[in-house]
Length: 345
Image (cartoon, rainbow, N blue to C red; front, top):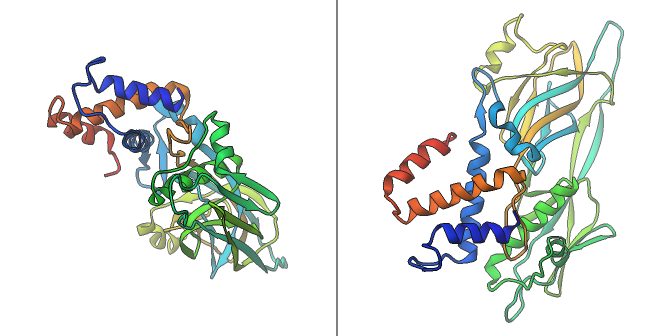
């Protein structure tokens, strides 16, 4: 289903056919409710692992979110005696992780070296145009590659005419994040590793870029991150993803401590931590995760990234949510909806 079909379905099922017996919802309101229920749909397929860290996908319904599975290999950064890896910008829920481990034998000497990773910070300014439409001429340039908001909309066969308010720049933010994530370009919003820049795109590994909003250019700038890393050596081995509350206890137990055959790992606020040991080094970490779905937008023609077979269920969830929200048929529907489809709250 394209996004217009989503809107038609929701509008028809929340009204008596052709009678308009209830207040119509604005397109932006329907977008918001579709996006909310899309996130809840994905979350309902994912559950915290029992007696372990991370999450697992409900195997009976795994196919309904298959388009969101991602595997990425990232260099491991030395963090004292341990290792850390910042989560990518599209990271949602970690399902498994592996480390590239090299066992140190007597006489082995592998040295870590300092490496600088530049993070390109590109602010998203508020349009200074005197009258609407706003943001209709927005372009992000990375190196020599320029992408306009019109190009993103045209790929969905939609002509984007801009927004009615300067406060609606969140539409532009979401569209560019979705576009770059689909291309495999790592980009985060406001936070990456230890960097926090409100209202900015963060592009790890990019060295130059800018943004133009309605004729006003803003140049990006670099924030360097210097880390110690080992060379790319070793073999892949699965980590033991554990809860943070018990990792320190496991580390002081000889049979459960971090080992080259099964390193301990745990979730941090914005990073994955791998517990180190003098008997081995870690050069890379491989993450298997479910990414956050891109947000839908009627004005930009952006539909759901879920598989086509999941679209009717997403429509039904949204209609059910609206009916409960408007007390149609009654408040009990909303209560049951929350109990059944908010597993993480």
